[in-house]
Amino acid sequence: APVHTVRGLAPLLRGARRIVIGDPFSRYVQLLLTLARARELVVVDDGTATMEFIALLARGEPLVRWHRGGRGGPRELAFAPFARTARRKLTPGPGRQVALFTCMPVEGVPEGVTVTTHDFAWTRTAFGPPAVRAGADLVGTSLVETGVVAEDHYVAAVDALVRHHGAVRYFAHRRENTTKLHRLAVETGLQIVRPDLPLELIARRGPIGATILSFPSTVVHTLPLALTGTGVRVAVCDIDPTWLTPHASPRAPSFLADVTGTARGVRRIGVGGG
Image 1 (tube, rainbow, N blue to C red):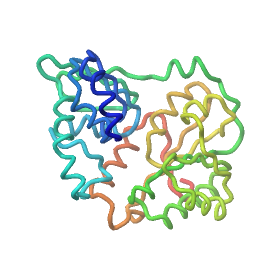
Image 2: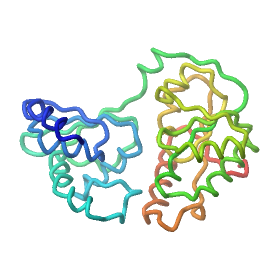
Image 3: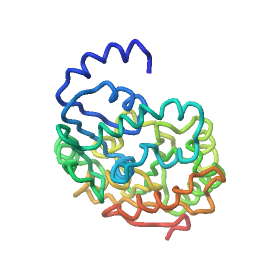
């Protein structure tokens, strides 16, 4: 984070009674938390990171995402004191309350953390219902970009889903690189869409396919809630362990399985159309 930005926010952070944050794994957020003296911290996050955040907080472990496991280095060592301070401030204690607002299923919530469930009621009221067209849409993932899944395996899996389920559009993840997306368009015939709004709003506004296909990701939890009552089905394709790169974290298989296994109201499929 730019030094002048941190300096500019410092007085506000020190004087705030309540601070609301998004991604607790963000280094920028963790750095800013070291300046905070708030008695109430609220984490608002509907991402899969929320599940991991609660588990790590309960175990008292560093707030480092699963796909970064084992990537120690000078930068990580230099940032470690800030990360420890952020974790301490996100842990409930005397004079400090921690609340979580999320749609994600969380288990083993530490004592003192208050959880409020986000059910997407406002989204359903404000947008839609959408026009539903025949066929399927596919939601992309950044598992290749984060070094978890090999690109060739990913492209082959996407191609198989297109052939077996008739997917027409591919909603790209914001971190997917243009080279991979171009390859997907050429090799699968998919129309690549870069959403300019959260996918939950895109889906509610429509038109949207009767089936939404996804790999393990946040949307297998959020879209069933956002699309309640529309008749749209959400299907998730598990990640085959043979698709993982040699550099993937040992935690990858179990975490991805948890993302899929805890999703409610979704259908599990394979690349072969099962």
